[in-house]
Length: 156
Length: 164
Image 1 (cartoon, each protein chain N blue to C red):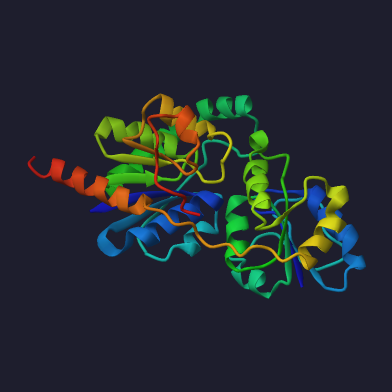
Image 2 (cartoon, chains in turn green, purple):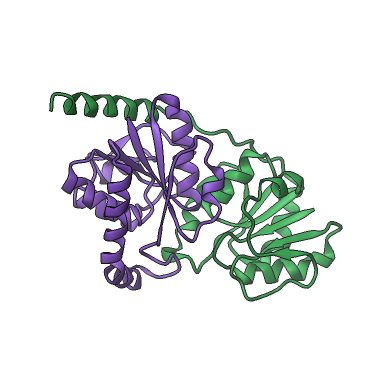
């Protein structure tokens, strides 16, 4: 199963493009369309679900908007991912993380929907780098800050 | 020690839940989520009270339109934040930079509650509008960026790695 997901807002151009390509692929395409107006004709679809984890786990490939939450969720499950930035989102910030992660080979970025077939073919053939949560000491710094804040408050 | 964790929605939530996982059992957690995000609460693994707030800014708008909406909805956003702070009585506030963190940041100054702002890792090139506002108005006791090169433009920020 190929899973196409757009997050909680809408991304009709992506849904439309994937719907048009669906008959050319040998797998069922499942769509999550959020608040989109376009309803796919070539595969089952739904708007939102409390969790997509089980669907991600079942999918052989995910085609998604470039929301950071979605990207991380899919990469942690080790699924091939084709990501298309949603130009409607404010200040087009989705392109930033996409460029960065594509440069590191975690996923395939597709900046032009006309190139989606090639991007999907690439995601299926090219071995992508497994994603691991980065090493951080942020929690240790924060714990130290909180200890200090608590000790400052105690004398009161 | 009670922490008010500003989840927001989507990627902000993911990052904060990773931080909560790393911070572990030493704290009591209360959570703030955007009302429109029905997904975030289901992902919480260390349970605690969940407060829902209306998002001050609709995500689809550009920066200028966004600013107008923020101004119009500001009184409501502050009332919601004040109510939540009164209920939760947190010892500190931590969030990964959704816009709904702004009123909490202002009230944290008023009530002298320690406030940590973590700029979203989803922004390797430019900081969010919320991040820039919090930084320049000094509305956080700690301001973290998750990409080291931001430190050159924002020298008062700190860097300690990336959550995701």
